Image (cartoon, rainbow, N blue to C red; front, side):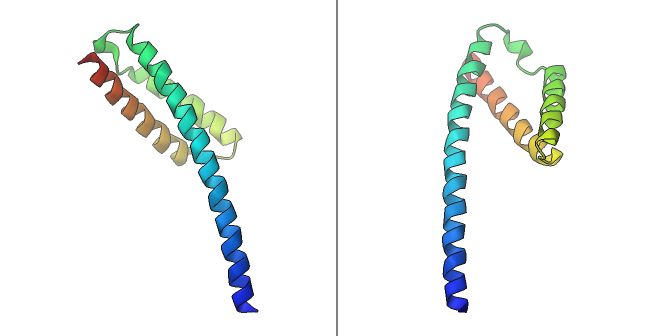
Length: 97
């Protein structure tokens, strides 16, 4: 009986991981779209304005608020968005070189 339960749990785990992989692909597609928009922004702002601390703070506040309604912990949103923002800032700087 225990062996059968392990097999059932393994199948369930595989299914959940498959679903996570599908979501990750969707996220990657959205990141690709976001990257294209960020690269458009480079055309309209000077190099000295790459980092807009007021905008970053406003973005984080809005994302955390939306995330709260979606039952996503603040630390998850903050960590992901700060990492994403910093990565795109690096990309923008690279484009100015």
